[in-house]
Amino acid sequence: MARAAPPRPGNVTALAGLIAARIAAAGPISLADYMAECLLHPEHGYYATRDPLGAGGDFTTAPEISQMFGELLGLWLVKSWQDQGSPAPFVLAEPGPGRGTLMADTLRAARLVPGFGAAARLHLVEASPALRAVQADRLAGHAPRWHTGIESLPDAPLFLIANEFFDALPIRQFVRRGGGWAERMVGLEDGRLAFGLARPVPIVALNHRLADTSDADVVEICPAAGPAIAEIARRIATCGGAALIIDYGAGPSLGDTFQALRAHRPEHPLASPGAADLTAHVDFVALAHAARSVPGVQVCGPLAQGALLERLGIGARAAALARRLTGPALESHLAAYRRLTHREEMGTLFRALALVPAGAPLPPGFA
Ligand code: SAH
Image 1 (tube, rainbow, N blue to C red):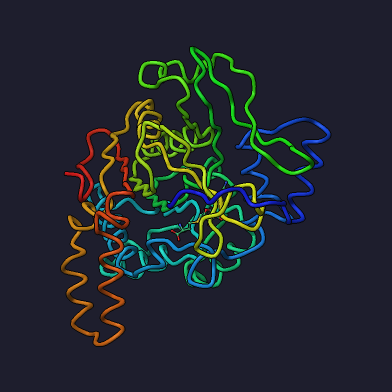
Image 2: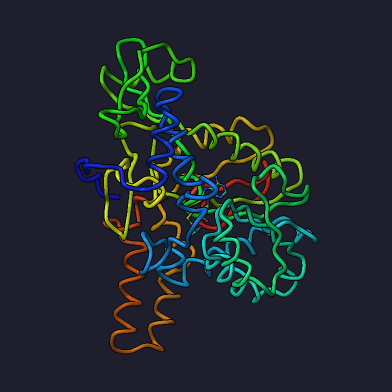
């Protein structure tokens, strides 16, 4: 979440060599192409090759910080499911499930309501073979099925949660030059990967940003995000269901948010392709707009993560868990509660967006 460190000399990974060869042969590539190579290259991609989460990894996420996060999202799903008449069977889906921790906590909390687990058919959207193996182990009792995209989920009422999925989708960056936009590219300088700018051209998809930006401003677009959320919205509008999407960012996009994290430290995004996590802030204005363009869906929020968790009862849950703890375990539990909710930690930087069918009751926390 901090800004990237200054450039580091040399791109040392095997993937850096492959990307440099591609650029030498065919010219500079967009940040989106660079990000996709770094994250998803089948042999050297960051997600393709490892489990990056947790203390021994490169970054951590809300479900890895505390079980309370998944439990409250589980209760959110159960209530939304009951509000729509408890349809059975239904698709319980999670894009980008990481280690499966969020879904495991969600399903455990949902056991409070008999019928939910029995009606749920678990579908996971995951690109990484390494993480699929971790999820298979963690969720073995729930017979998950895997998909490479949201499009192939079965047609049925869809109850979906996604945490830090959209921030991993590749972005493109543009620098405003008068009435046009110069795309930020990855090229070569003295044989090493380096940022450069393409010639400015008008970009139809950014016409509306001419009104709220000035010369030299940077804006980002995430080409895969709109189609992904529209697909979720279309299924909810036609089959029923609910989606809760949590990620960091605000919007409308303004400024360079492209960042690399390695061993919990920021580094230059070109420093070690394939060995660092690459993300960008999620533009919730664009995401909500893409969802709203689908007829028959109600878009709720975005709402700050801290506010949502407080409204879902994290205070009472934290107090109940605290009663069983003492010493360092109690301290780390209270630190986790603060980390998830406090405005100086994840409380306002992260936001939640919810989708339900038009006319359905507003989901918990969004009323
Ligand atoms: N939701 C988890 C993990 C977040 S990390 C948590 O909160 O802990 C991002 C997750 O999205 C990983 O599981 C990663 O492998 C997956 N992912 C990233 N890009 C993807 C893509 N294009 N398609 C499918 N899954 C992707």
